[in-house]
Amino acid sequence: MRDLNEGTLTNETIRAVTGGSDKRISQVSEALVRHLHAFIREIEPSQAEWEYGIKFLTRVGKQCSDTRQEFILLSDTLGVSMLVDAINHRQSEGATETTVFGPFYVENRPQLPLGANMSPDETGTPLFVSGTVRALDGQPIAGALVDAWHSDEVGHYDVQVGDDLRMRALFRSDAEGRFWFWTVRPTFYPIPNDGPVGDMLAAQGRHPYRPEHVHFMISAPGQQTLVTHLFIDNDPYLDSDVVFGVKNSLITDYSRHDAGTAPDGSTCHRDFLTLNYDFVLNPEAE
Ligand code: BEZ
Ligand code: FE
Image (cartoon, rainbow, N blue to C red; front, side):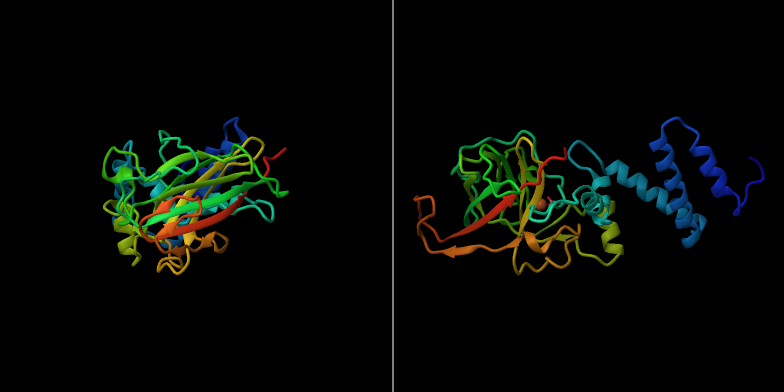
């Protein structure tokens, strides 16, 4: 392993990184070196550019904390998260499509009864969300866990502005697989862009926005956990989502209603919106 040069370095590095006993580590290490070297050979960085790249990754690492994962944001904005999602969810025809998880899920969210308002103190437009959870054969799934979370009317998640958990909750579907709850209309928003990923987006001539959406995570025994969103039709960012998460089957729209009786029989004293969607879970692999 001496006098290595442009011609011999790649194969020698691959030989060095594939000597361990774990076959998967050898496979991953080999592919990593092969692709990384091909990338470097293609772009032929100057020494200063290589240093810039190292400094950029260092900044990404330093930006990470208990509440901020800049590496995942980098993965999201380079299309890697959605590629991993696609590879891991080659699901059956008819099952609801998946999309990116995002950084704003909170384990500690409240569990609320069906029909509850998960955003009682928000000033946004009242929104009634309802739907069903079904298996691939159309059977309703009773007792499915339905997690929902979204931004406020100006595009902030609760965790971005304080300690109070708002605009998020866990519900359990009823005997007919139905769920329903009240909240407020979210809006499109920029992903956290005050760090190195934001600088990268600016340098690439990209905006940092995600189209308006409500996140869902739905789980039930014997079914794959579904991580997805509902997007809203005609949003200005549907065709340029900064994390590449939009799928046509997940685009839906609100129905608009004058103040009055809501679908759950309650009275809403302001004009309100309704959003309805039927989710279909993919069976767990045998
Ligand atoms: C989100 O939708 O919450 C999200 C997804 C990826 C990156 C940032 C935010
Ligand atoms: Fe989101």
